[in-house]
Image 1: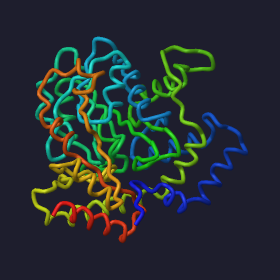
Image 2 (image 1 turned 45 degrees about the horizontal axis):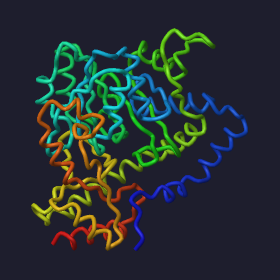
Image 3 (image 1 turned 180 degrees about the vertical axis):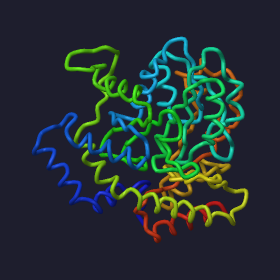
Length: 366
């Protein structure tokens, strides 16, 4: 059996006619930059998330950078975040001149440990940037309470958790600002790079809209520093159609994730499945296990034509470009980086394919 880690072709075939019609409409009106589909897409995204504003941008990384710039976070400032994440989280902080301050993660959720945050706060701390890793949010109530106590801003890095929920409220609308990615492999992906920022703050929304067009507030008038951070009209047209199907895809992700986990319960300590915390909806941007001998596990599954991936094999405190920001104990992040492995996960996966993967995992671990 041929198995894809993510099957974007199957997803495209399900909406091919509608997506092609949307693309052709853009080709015909030729408004390729900030065309009418951008505004339509942003309205739809905001309605889905429940936020007042949605600002599309060129990537999830740009979303984080634009949010930090809008808050005027700069050299001398500190932003608390996790070392167990994709590099863009810390990269955005460093690119605006600020300093990332790493806090270790919880072993069962892989997300930043709120109990460790307060100890990392200094007079230079301006924001907390939790990451909703693999598709499940951290305890945002606890994080927001700490931020309120210390008068800090919370920016949720929701690159992998669009569609997830915390106590019935959507990821990206759980704090002051939410940033997500529309990279093709994300829960909601376009057909290239893309991202969005969500907020209920009018002032920040205006700033971020100006930042994404070189800091421009009126044609050729630039009151602030900005970037070229626009999302192409064609990508917004694609997202409009993909978002229409997205609620069904979230349901499928939840079903597939729960089925994987239930199937692995009889493996005992040989594998640790993702733990879904109370009052949270996990969208499984990645379905990630913890195993003791990852290299052998991956090699054995490869022989059975089951692809795997590692997110992430080296925490940021061990990355050459970020080691200088490592000034604490990150034992959990370092342990997880040696043991995590992700299985194929996509909403159009059929039962026969998942059964084969489940059987293969059980065969190699027994």
